[in-house]
Image 1 (cartoon, rainbow, N blue to C red):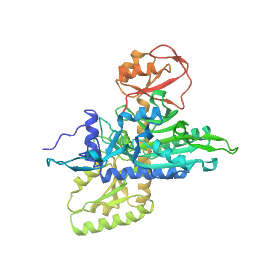
Image 2: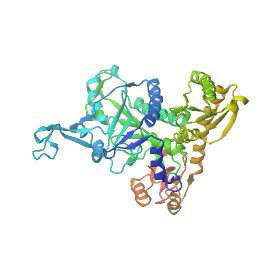
Image 3: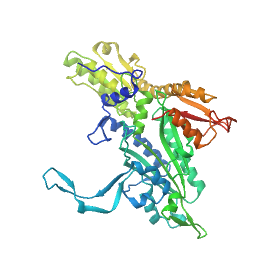
Image 4: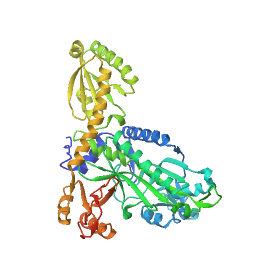
Length: 490
């Protein structure tokens, strides 16, 4: 007996987990808190990675790779950094196993203890800045614009596929600059790159903002972010870009000689996005039938299913699809003909719907006779009979329309679920309905902490395009210079 399908309104969390499995994106592994990203899920991640990597290189960055293991002494050099990550660190203490004397299995060899314990990379600022110390002597060595594609480990106690796992994939940029102004500009530029990617590729509208002091990255002087609203009204931090000041340069004694020969500490940034973007994509667009993938990120953009009763009918229909295949691939559109005899058309339709393939074509003998083909779009589930003449151009335009439509739908959802409040009592009611709440805040960590403790809502960001608006803090009544964005989040 098949299990009842859970809808988003019935149980959003279960709907999400079920979709990840049904769309063949990922699954839990036997390693606590870690996931297996399956080929289809990894193909979407690769498309994300490729699009971002192109943009990184266009803005002057190069890829490199640094060690997975970080000496514990490195992490302790920057005080706020270690405070921020200490509870999430996985530590390697020994380097060898041996058979237990009682034959019960393998045990750690106590004689194989490391001289210095190693941290499994939670982030790479410390190991990278130890290298930068050897790379930088003069202003001629700057700027250094490095990105790393890697995996990291943060020992999460409560995990969720893609959104929060003990090990995840990401990219982390680490740059070194001769001036504060140049470093700040770099952090802002990379935030713009993330926002452009989120909106133009993921079709996910985001708000660019600044984190409060208590929400900054550990070791940063300023953290910029992009925040997105999911279908259930919760916020998701989709990317961050940090101005690190000279904190890591001072911790690792990284100085450069300026044009006058004077030694100065280097200025730094770091920035990153992770496979959490997969969770964002799922929760921004998908529906009760399955995944919905924006065409720009879809591993398969168009699938063609022949409808036939005889080998002769199949051959003529597949031949027509193969003609279109050449035309579509010439336009850079990924195309698949599913002529598998072992699966019925209805089964194929259901599979590609769950996987979120943007466009599906169905063609039978009657359609061939009438010179038309059935075109179904995944986002709206609309089916249309379209003339075969100029079908490649029609599909190309349709993919553009689907991409834009997904963004506009998500933007309309965000705007409909963004509300303004004046009082704390009003806020407590509204925050339970989800969405972004715009409210005045007095700028103190005490008020921020009180709201978080009492409502589980946090200040997601102070929008960079925030309009100055004198008012009173909704909690304390103290003066406020503008509204901030509160929400519950993932």
